[in-house]
Each structure stands twice: as C-alpha cells, then as structure tokens.
Image 1 (cartoon, rainbow, N blue to C red):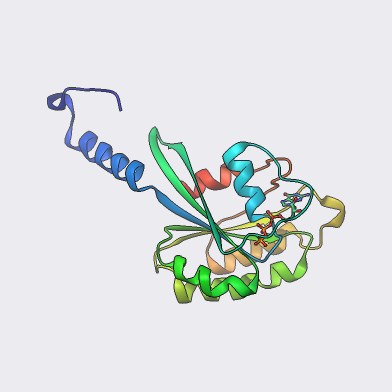
Image 2: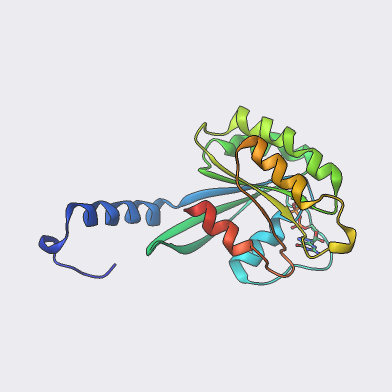
Amino acid sequence: FSVTPTALLTKDDLKLKLIACCLFIDGLIVMLLGDSAVGKTCVLVRFKDGAFLGGNFIATVGIDFRNKVVDVDNLKVKLQIWDTAGQERFRSVTHAYYRDAQALLLLYDITNKPSFDNIRAWLTEIFDYAQKDVVIMLLGNKSDMAAERVVKTEEGEKLAKEYGVPFMETSAKTGVNVELAFLAIAK
Ligand SMILES: Nc1nc2c(ncn2[C@@H]2O[C@H](COP(=O)(O)OP(=O)(O)OP(=O)(O)O)[C@@H](O)[C@H]2O)c(=O)[nH]1
C-alpha cells in the first residue's frame, strides 16, 4: 500500500484498504473441479507460470495448492488455488475441501462429450458440499482443438445459462481466456 496519513483517508478508503488487507492475508480460495484430463492442472500452470504442460499426462493425486497475487480494481488479491484430482477414487478426499472454497472453476473438455455430460453431476456435488454463496464459473477447455471439438460453444452457453453461471471457453495450450477466467472469478 502507498503510505497516506490516516487523517487524509475517507471512511470508504479505510474500508477498502481493510478489505484489501484481509484478502491479501487470507487469500481467496478458488477450487478447480471437473473430470480427469479436462485440463485443470494445465489451466492452473498456464495462469501461474504462463507455460503449457504438454507431453505425458500425469493425473493429480488428491489435491494440490498454488498461490498467485492478482490486481483486482487496484486491490492486490491473493488467490489460493486448489487443483483437485478429477478421478472418481479421490472424490471423498476432495469433498472435504469444497466447504472452504469461495469460488469454483468447473471445467469440461470441448473434445470430450462425457466430461460435458458430467457437469450436471458436478453441479449436484457442488450444491451438496460447497458453501451456498460460492461463486461458480463454467469453462470449456481445449478450445485450441477445433478439429476434435464435439461440444459446441452454444451447448456450453446454454448449460451455463440454465444454472445461472458465467461461461467461457479456454485453452491452457494457447492461453486464451485463462487469465480472464481467474480475474473474472476474483472480481
Ligand atoms: N490441446 C490442449 N491440450 C490440453 C489443454 N489442457 C490440457 N491439455 C492436455 O490434457 C491432458 C490432461 O491435462 P491435465 O491438466 O493434467 O488434466 P486434469 O484435469 O488436471 O486431470 P486430473 O489431474 O486427473 O484431474 C494433458 O495431456 C494436457 O497436456 C488445452 O487447453 N489444449
């Protein structure tokens, strides 16, 4: 923060600084959810390090954590990002973390229809385990794979509309919309 004599700050300034301070210290917990191999880890690595994890797919075991500080309306907000395993066998582990998340990025793979069809089941789990006021965003990942696409953009939009959540298509490979998605959810 810039150092301004407290007497020169308005009540609103002080309130904003206090909110910013809390967000910076505690962080906003964002959880990545969705079927195995939809690209959760890659989206996180693209956001955190600006790189793409190509090559051999290594499934996440249980849950993994990374932090990144972002600027939201001139406030520094620490995002604590929890990358969960999509594999069914880790479900009981990840359920335990839902309650602490303030925001959820729910991913499917636009080249994998079952991963899209399972979004309804993911949303049911979210309604069962997450906080009632959790912020949810739906992401159709791997948008760079146009030739292999099996889920139309409109289908993603329609599902998102049905549940009243925002929607974007992302690519961890090219980086399209990845930063935008995290910033939108942080707002
Ligand atoms: N072309 C392309 N490939 C991607 C993209 N995102 C991820 N991949 C590939 O998809 C595979 C799975 O990616 P991960 O990020 O490991 O998937 P995950 O959702 O974290 O999987 P789990 O840890 O099992 O839940 C890897 O081989 C990635 O290289 C993308 O945007 N475009």
